[in-house]
Image 1: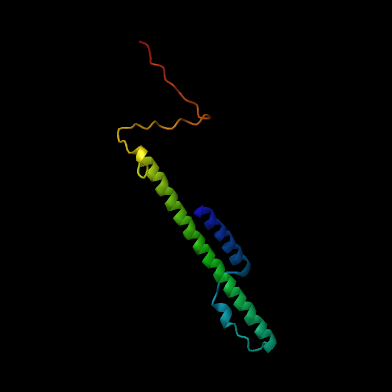
Image 2: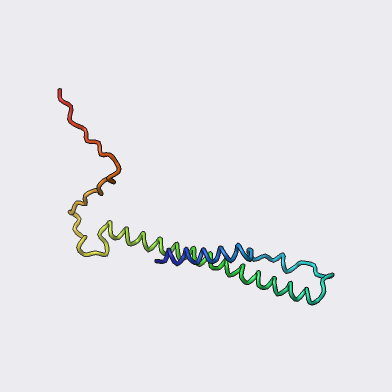
Length: 117
């Protein structure tokens, strides 16, 4: 479940970064000496929106990555404990032999006949 949440956050973050662009410090240092004051205010507002949503997108990508990492660690821990019998008192018998998983039905099984001499 954590993996799915992480993927959803990553998708939202990537869309924000794709649309608004990654946050950049160069936008704040654009020389606007010949720009009228009303246009300058509009550009400042636009740069602020780009910076906010670009930063939010990067943050969502990072949080989504962390959710995926935690989900993967949790999934690995569950699989590892199931294989080794930890966490389940019914599987603590060390003498119990576990049969190997059957081959996939699409894989041909080759059985060698003993050679007669």
